[in-house]
Image (cartoon, rainbow, N blue to C red; front, side, top):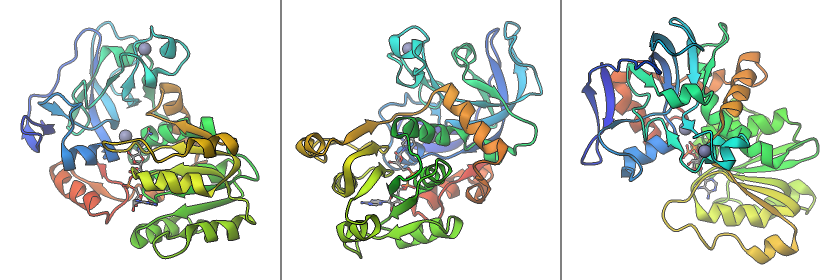
Length: 345
Ligand SMILES: NC(=O)c1ccc[n+]([C@@H]2O[C@H](COP(=O)([O-])OP(=O)(O)OC[C@H]3O[C@@H](n4cnc5c(N)ncnc54)[C@H](O)[C@@H]3O)[C@@H](O)[C@H]2O)c1
Ligand SMILES: [Zn+2]
Ligand SMILES: [Zn+2]
């Protein structure tokens, strides 16, 4: 089979590889759709110390079960499933309270197991046991259902933020992630969603799909003044940093109202201190939330939102590439000409 493999010299390459076979406790899917995440793009650009080479990368996937071990009772051949990639141990305190994504001994598809950028993928036994595999409703297209995993991470963030009627939400970065935060905030009843974006082409692409967005470019406008105008001087009640940029974290803190909530959704490469002023958080009674990956329950909630049509992801699922063209997909993401790439092997 064809597979996109992270090799010894930290380089990615399309290779011919033996397809996986299931053990007694695992299953094999034929990948129906897999999408490229910001994490994969970071690996493409800089390599990743977290991946043990050689490894097939990719972790956002839906596929059809084509082979199954004799001890797996939950699924059968022919079923279409989505797999949540962050797999908990089931034993630590976080796993026991349902937060398997922050497990003490987390294992992740595409890092600790061969991933999704291939024609076939083995679902590890632990993923099956931990409930990371969900059956798909017949009506939802694979190219839309595959977006459930990144959307599950967004649901995770919003479970902390508790956005509701009357909230004014600022989002920093209008990539796929920022756009999904905007869609979910609107569903939750946010009064206004302000998209702060430095790349005009990216802002335009987001606005074309979601015309309710209010766009601010901090390189061309005074961010503080614009936010004051839009919020009657108070500041936004919720800020979401949907990029990996320290100065955006500082901007988020500065535009947030007293008692506001801030989500640090994007992690920072290398140095990650000094962007948030702790006394400002203290005196203004602000809350800052971290968020990392998602649980199986959040993946199922994302699938429910997509398949019920509550969250219309179709406009975001238009850039589809064959696996043999995956380098082209990465190049398009790398120069920011597209927002999200979906691979249909
Ligand atoms: N926490 C999680 O579970 C999780 C999951 C997936 C992605 N992420 C993170 O979410 C972030 C967004 O992902 P994406 O795929 O949409 O990335 P992306 O690179 O496609 O989009 C980021 C956008 O931010 C913009 N930007 C850069 N600097 C800015 C600034 N100072 N102010 C405003 N906008 C700025 C860029 O122009 C770009 O359009 C990344 O940091 C990624 O690592 C986190
Ligand atoms: Zn992802
Ligand atoms: Zn655990």
